[in-house]
Amino acid sequence: KKPLSDFEIKRVRKALAERLAELKDKESGPAVNDAIKELLSWEGLVRGKGNQQMARNFGLFWAAFVELRKYTTESADFWDMSSVGFVAEGLVRLGQRMWGTDERVNEAMTQLILQELNQKGDEELEEGELASKRKSGDYFGALSLKSVLESMAYAALDIPVEKYPVNGLCSLAWALAEGNVVNQGVQMKVARGIIAEVNRMQPADVGKIFVAMEEKRWFKDQNTVAYLTESLMSRVRTLKKEDAGIAQMVAERQAEASEEVAKAQAAKTSR
Image 1: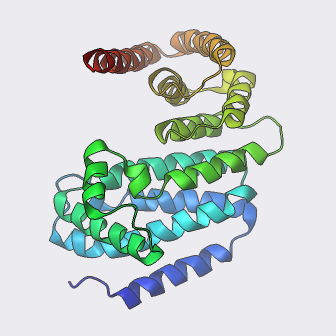
Image 2: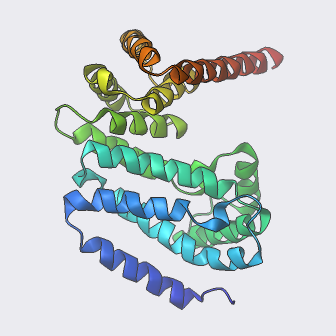
C-alpha cells in the first residue's frame, strides 16, 4: 500500500479535531486518554515489527498524535486531576515508544518532525541536531512534548484544592519528572495530595513516586521529601503485609535509583 497523501492526512486530522470539539469539557480528558491508549497499541511501535508498510502508515499515526498533542495543550485547563495525570503519563509513554521504534519507522518520524518544524519556520532544530537529540534520548524536545507537559503542570496548579485521586497525582508526578518539568507549586500540591491520600496508594503508584523522588529528584523541597518519604515508607510497610510481592518491587525500584545516583556521581568524578 502507498502512504497517505498530505491531503488525506489533513482530512484525518480535521475529522479527529471535529470529533474532539464535540466532547464536553469533563468527558474530553478520558476520551483523549483512551485515544492515547489506542496509539500505544499500534503494532508499528513494537520493536522488530517496524517494517516498510508500518513506515508508510506512520503518517496516519503521526496525524493523530499531533492532533491529540494540540488538543491537550488547549484543553487541559478544563480537566480534573485524574485526567491531567493520566494523559500526561500516556503522552510520555507514547513518546518513549515512538522514540524507540525500528529504523524505518524512525526515519519516517524524523522526516515528519523536520517537516513540522519547517512549517513553523523554526530553524532551531535541524537534521543534525535532531540526530543528536535522538542519540541523547531527548524525545521531549524533538516531539514537542515538553511544552505540552508544562501546560499540563499549570493546568494542575489551577485545579481547586480538594482531595484528588492519588493514582492521578502519581501519574502526573512521574510524567513531569520524566520530562524534567520543574514547577514548585505543582510539586507541593502533588506531595500534599499524596500524603493526604497515601493509604489509597497501590504498588504501581508507589513505584512511580519512588522514580520521581529518588531517581529523577523531581521534588526539590527537602522538608517535602522528608514528609513524603515517611508517608511512603509507612504505606510500603502496610502493602508488604498485604502482598509479599510488593517487597521485591520496592527493592528493585530502590536498587535502580541507587544505581542511577552512582552513575551520576561517577560521571561527575570523571569530568
